[in-house]
Image (cartoon, rainbow, N blue to C red; front, side, top):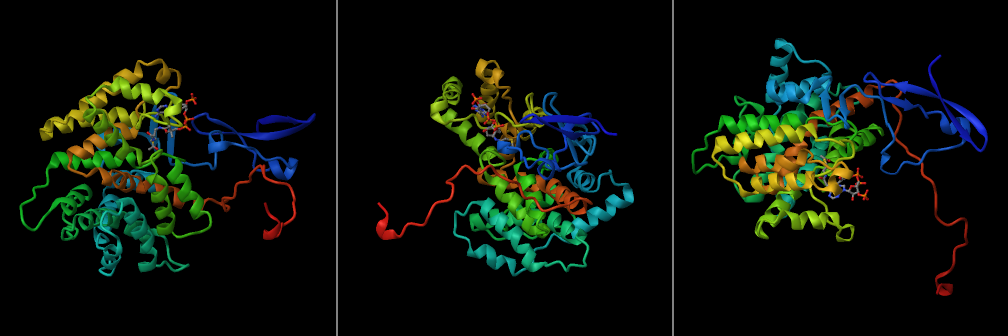
Length: 425
Ligand code: ACO
C-alpha cells in the first residue's frame, strides 16, 4: 500500500496517493481527484503543479543543481559536445562510439533545406524578427516533410536537429540581404553554423576554434530544462498528436517572450541602456525595486532557482575566458558584473532570492562571437531543441499519455439573456 495524503473538504475526508521521485521529491497524485470528489485544484502559473512524470532532467532550485539524464551540467559543459548531449537528452544514455558516429553522420546528412523553402524566406519583410521567421519555417517543415502515420518519428527528429542551424543562419543572411551559405558537412555542428552565419563570398572567413567551443558550450547549456514555458508548450501541443515540427514551432513561439528565452536579448539591451546612461547601476536597481515602474532586471530571477542558476555561473566563467581569448573588451561585461554585485547585496533581491539566470551572461558571449542581438533567442532555440524533442518523444511514448486539458474556476456572469442591439445602453 503506497503512502497517502489526506484531504479534508467540508468535513469529508479523502485519501490521495503520494508519489515519490527518484530524488526524493514528493507529490500528491490528484489524477482521480475530480472523479472522486468533484473538486479541481487552482494553481496560477502552475507553480505547484507537476504536469507529468519525466526522466529527462533534474533541477534542485534550492541547491542550484541541474542534471540532464542524471549527469551534472558542469560535467557536460566541460567534457561533452552539443551533438553528444543531444543524443543523451533524447535517448537517455551517452552514445557509444558506434552510436555516436552514426548519429553525427545522420545529423550531417540532413542539413540541407529544400530549395523551395527559400521562397518562404523571400516572403518575409526586411526587419522581420528572426524568431518569427524561425518559428514559421520550422512549422513549414511539416509541409515539406509530412510523416506518414506508420513511419517512425526518428527521421523527423534527425531532420529537425540537422536543419535548425541552416534555418537560423539563413534567417540572418536574409535579414542582411546577403547570399545564403550552404551547410558544410565536413564541419562540426557549431562550426558549420558559424560558417553559414559569417562567411561572405567577398572575403576569407576563418572559423575560430575558440568561438566554436564557446558556441557548443552555450548550446549544451540550453539543451534542456524540464517543464519550462516552451517545453510545456511543446508537450501541450504534442498532446493533441500534432507532429514534431508543429509542436516545436509552438515551443519557439513560447520561448520568444521576454520573461522566458527572449530575456537574453533584453539583458544586452538593458546593459547597453545602463552604459549609455553613464553606467550607474544603482539607478536601474532602484527602478527594478519600484513596483510601480513595471521595470525588472532582465536576466534575474527564476521560477525554480532560488539560488544561483548553475548555468549562469558556468556562463560567467566562459564569458570571462572567451572575451579574453578573442581579445574583446566589452564595457557591458563590466556593467553586468557590477549589476550582479550590487543586486546580490541588496535586501530586495536577497529576500526574494533573485539571482542571475541563464540569460544574464549568455548574451555577452554571443555578442563577443558576433551574433547580432536579435538572433540571441534563436540561439536559445537551437540549444533547446534536444530538450523539446526529448519531451515530445517521452510524452508520445508514455503509456498513460492523454490530451492536455486543464480545467478552470469560472468567475464570469451566471446565466443571463441576450439583449437586442436597440435595447442596449
Ligand atoms: N527584477 C525585479 N524584481 C523581480 C524580478 C526581476 N527580474 N523577478 C522577480 N521579481 C520580484 C517580483 O516583483 C516579485 O516581487 P513581490 O513578491 O514583492 O511581488 C517576486 O520577485 C517574485 O516574482 P514573480 O514574478 O512572482 O516570479 P515568477 O516565478 O512568476 O517569475 C520570472 C519568474 C518570470 C523569471 C521573473 O523572475 C522575471 O520576470 N525575470 C526577468 C525576466 C527573465 O530574466 N526571464 C528569463 C528567465 S530564465 C528562462 O526562462 C530561460
